[in-house]
Amino acid sequence: MTASIQVAHFATAARRHYADGDHLFSMQRYASADHLAGFAAECALKVILLQFLGATLVKGKPVSVIGGGQKVPHSHLPPLWDNLPLVASGRGGASFVALMTKPNPFVGWAVDDRYSDGKHIDPVQVRAHLDAAKQIIAIQQQAQIAGALP
Image (cartoon, rainbow, N blue to C red; front, side, top):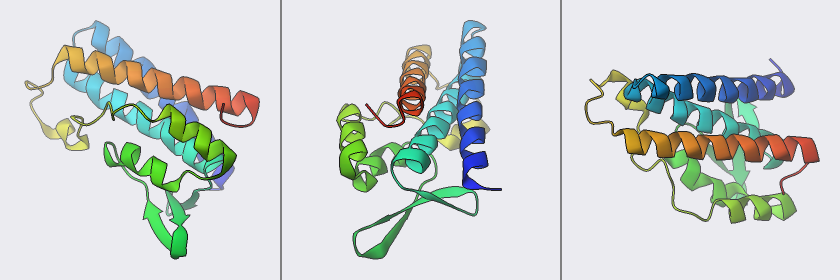
């Protein structure tokens, strides 16, 4: 699978996960909504990494190379959010880092929550995760339209 095809899949998956998560939130299915909010944000961030911040796909996952040739693999939130300023460089990177200066909205999100009973998942936090995912998707879509990050 080529990088351009994979990027398209990440972008489509981001929108699909967000829409499904938002629907589940409206049905008070908070644990599943939160899970999908995190994956929506991850997918949109991976598009940004691949299209605008120089990451390449290695075995289907984005990997960035930073100073000294050190490879930074990108996986799940919340570390994915925290790693982005480390790999952002150049004009587009500086613009993106400026958008990421707020605290990581996914600090309490964990991919392993998919195995939990979901009772600890707070609807206020889920709404915040969905809102953050929506903002990241909008940034990614605007960057794609403009051909670069704002």
